[in-house]
Image (cartoon, rainbow, N blue to C red):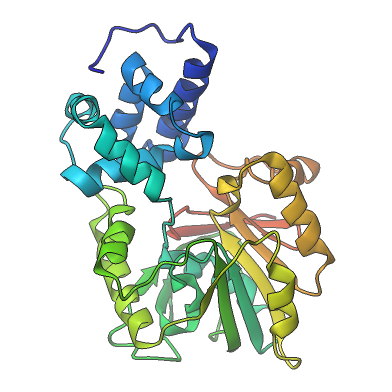
Length: 335
């Protein structure tokens, strides 16, 4: 499974589909963000052995983030694409076992910074329901500190001095909040909630942070400490079947918000995404989505939105309002 002098396209259509996925990841997600992951993804895309390994897995287990995290979880971070592919050659069974057991549940708390302006404009107090909540770190926006240019917002719950601060670059006419949203009730929903009391599960969460992202790792550790001291409730359940029940449990005197970030792309099919969008549109809630533009491409097309490479698209009740940094690092208002 070592490096091969493969052509830019693989003759086997299934392998070429996998290769295209890794080339897109390298170009649109890793480029300029993680040189390590960019090199690994390009290496996989031209290595027939690596592609055959991935093609042997269920489609939902072929994601670059899952493969790369599994290797790092087991063996640390190889220094080059050749070393990475060599590890894949030598230890395919161990790697596939971790990929079968684990899932990508990157719980990036800094994404709260890009959600905060939308949350602050809604009627208060709020009832927050996060689908695909992982460990629930994004259910605690009022437990963190923020810096939007010259504007600083301090946590209103917990211990501000111990909480992480999330810097967020503001571009355009973003309605930067003047005060923290009031959260009266919060709950998460996830197929496999992450237990922050488990050292092993916390280790996996840390491994999902990309190489070179030391600041993200540090802020994640501080957010985990915040959540351990005031743990959010995350129920095990399916967003397609269990969301409506949670909505009806929210207190009557609250404004209910259903939100998610980098979740819908992990649903099993386009139909599942469409079913979720239809369902949430029928519920008495405000729906906030922070996803890759490809996930809700029809909304972007209808509204004439062309997202910058590598950005997420923030929508409120189906209306495109901003481009956001995938890790919460920036928000760019859509005029």
